[in-house]
Image (cartoon, rainbow, N blue to C red; front, side, top):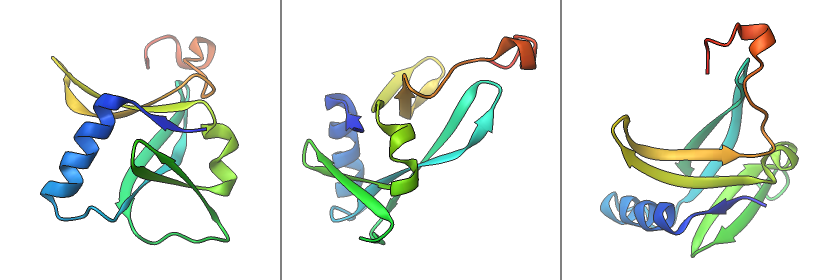
Length: 109
């Protein structure tokens, strides 16, 4: 199931505390598809539906996703990067596919 790295957990906890939103969950969702594979999104929220959502707890944080997206996110790992291209949270999913160079010509990835 979805997991969060130690680095991402520290950063997310700090962000939640800084914004006074310690009780919120991190929602992970499928935002669409491209030739480079699945595109993901994340948001902070407290609107969790027991009927439609699946909640995972990891490192003291709640991660929520729509039950329909759960299979596609089964191998997802949430990480936090800080490098020359910028910093922020990313979702790495070995189950999410990669660049389809036959459809994008190799230039989109």
